[in-house]
Length: 255
Image (cartoon, rainbow, N blue to C red; front, side, top):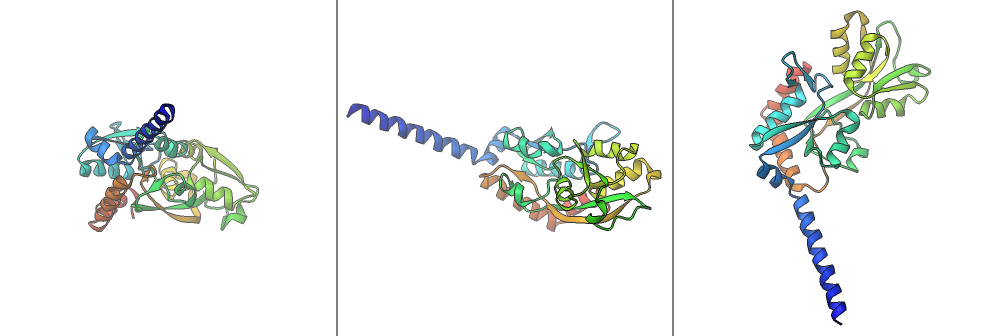
C-alpha cells in the first residue's frame, strides 16, 4: 500500500513538473520581456531583405522590420545570423525566439512552426539572359537552373521543373556570386536577387522570364506560443494599417 501511494505521488509530482514546463514554454513573450531582449534570426546574406552595408552594419527590409518590432516591444534586439536552410532549425532548437528572414508561408512549414499574419509578399521567379526564351517550366527541360537551398524558390522550381538540372547554393549571397561570375545563367529566385545581380554585373543582361508563384511572408514562431503570436499579429496589423511596414518594404524593394 505504501509503495503504491509513493508511486502515485511520484507520478503526480512528475505530471506537475511537466505541466509547469509546458506553461513556461508557452509564455515566451513573458520570458522575452523579463530578459529585456528578443533574439531574432535574420539572414544578412539575402539583399535587400538583409545585408551588410559599407559601414559593416546589418540593413535591409527584414532588418528594419526586426528593429522596429523589438523597439515597439520595448526590448533590445539580438540578431541571430541565419541562412535559408537554418531558419526553421534555429527556431525549433531555441537558438532564436522568432524568425524574420523572408520566410514564405507554406503548408509544409505550417506543420512544424507557426506564422504571424503576413507582413509582406514575395514573388518566386525564374530569370535568365535576355535573349533566351523561357516562358514556363517546360522551357527549363534539360537546362541548368540555380537556386538557394531550402528556400521556397528551391521547392517551387524543383516541383515545377522536374526535367531541369537543379543546382543549389547555400545562401542568396552565394547564388548572386554564382550568377555574377557566370556559374549560373538561369536562376530561380526573387526579383530582389535578380536586381542585385544586375546591379553588380549590368553586362549580364539578366531579366525575369516568368513568375513561378506569389507567396506571403510571415514571421516564424515556435508552436504553442499564443501570447507572443497574438502580440505579433496585432503589431503587424497595426503597422500595416499605418503604413510603416509598407514604407520599409518600398524603401528597399521599390514597390
